[in-house]
Amino acid sequence: GFLRGVHFRLRLEHRVTRHILRTMAFRGALRRSVRHLMRPVSATTSARWIARPVVQGASRAFSNDTGSHSDFAPQRKVVADNVEEMMALIKKQTTENKVMLYMKGTPNQPQCGFSAQVSKIMAVQGVDFASVNVLDYPLLRECIKEYSSWPTIPQLYVNGEFIGGCDIVTQMHQSGELEELFKEAGATA
Image 1 (spheres, one colour):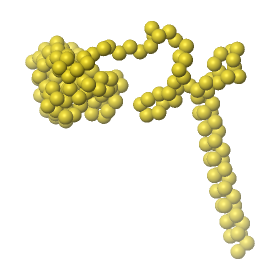
Image 2: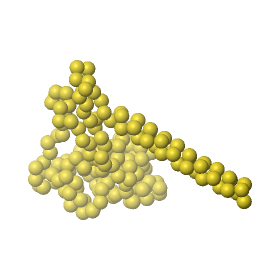
Image 3: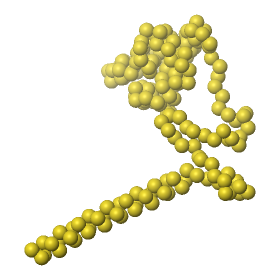
Image 4: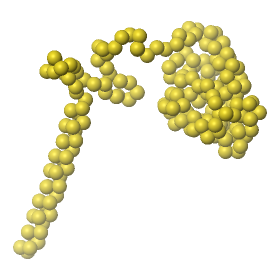
């Protein structure tokens, strides 16, 4: 009886100690991670602190004063204002580029799994292609679906002809049809 009681107390102490150590380690890690989020504004105003950008989903919160000239701010190209102009722009993009991909994100930084899949296939195929991030242009995002009569993105065009979305491109890649299509279009790198 006595030894069981001692053994039980030791196990309990061990569990409590382990819990305390984990909690302390978590708090230490939390303190370290929060500490890097704050930085002094300048050497003269080191007592004042401002928050660094904090990623929240796909958006970021920044201080209004970037300390940079407006010439260095990100610039977006002005595109069509109405549906007719946007349809004409899509037609121009798909016909002027041998291979055109409308996707969410960029080939280097896709913003959805389907776009990532098609980007990887394009890289494996070794094809030079133009792409547009539809997330930057809401009107384009809606018009491209109407233009192709296809409800989803990404959308691949070769020589102005709509090929398909992720599933179709993946099937064509696996069967070898996509490679033949790119060779016929003269789009291989």
